[in-house]
Length: 91
Image 1 (tube, rainbow, N blue to C red):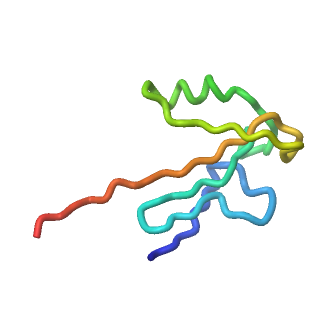
Image 2: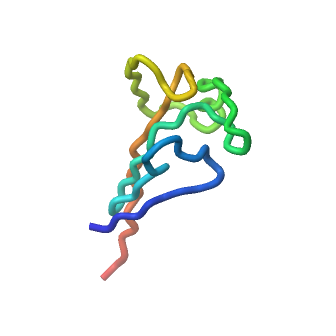
């Protein structure tokens, strides 16, 4: 099993003791992201508009979890799990 920490300045930096993402073998676990502009760490909240720009039907699954409060008092946070296609090579 291989484990790799993933971090990019193109996404909001972690607010707390967690990594932006962890890759274990062919699966990537992306930490919950609140709607922050990476350069300024200011809040935006246009989830459906942005998802519609990057995804088309059939859309990925989404989950909603009710919590008492999120960082910076935002109304939404998203996380994801991604499986990377395994390249098969002929023997």
